[in-house]
Structures are given as C-alpha cells and as structure tokens.
Length: 135
Image (cartoon, rainbow, N blue to C red):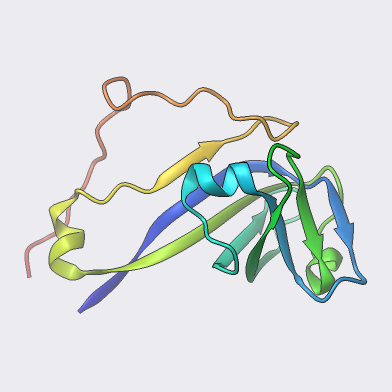
C-alpha cells in the first residue's frame, strides 16, 4: 500500500499578484521552490488563509529572489494580492517507509514579504508525535 505524505510546504506565503488572463498555474519564486524541493510543473495544493479557498494547480518558476507568488488564470478568482496562502505538495511512500517515521517534509515559513522566517534546527525542533498502530 502507498500513503500520500506531505513533501513540501511554503507556509503563509503572501500573494504578490493575480493575473486572470494567464493560462493557469501558480507562479513561485524559484529560490523558494528550491528551498522546499518543489519542481517546475509539480502539482500543488493551495489553501488561502485569508478567504478559505482551497485549490489544486501546478507550480511555475518566477525569477530567483523575486519573492513573487502569483495566482494565474482561474486561481486569480480565488485570491488577491496580500492574501496569505499555504502551498503544499505531496509524495507517495510505501506504507512501511511511512511507518518508519524518517520522512520529513521540507517546510519554509515566510513573512509578509515572502522572506524566510527562522526555522528551528533539527536539534531545536520538537520531535514529532507519531502514533501509528502496527498493521
């Protein structure tokens, strides 16, 4: 059996632009994409903290260091500049691998300018609480 697990997350990204006339997708600063392991054209789930909308689309790179988060096409109707969003991607793991608890998603918390906020090191971070009954 395969289990879908969180792979990458940009937490509280700030939408910088919405472009209804673009074909579709979510533009993301390629520096931020690389920081969490998101690939161009990778499927993402976006949760808009500001209005509650959730939608799926795919990531396209914006210029490195631009700090752009751009809602394109139909997604532009689900948010606007200034909205805070959570951008997530997922990966399929074998159940045995998922149960080992070694998989760690790459998470980056962002401020209102889409600059990374300090993330605790592995030594500083609390240990995850995992309680998965054996099959």
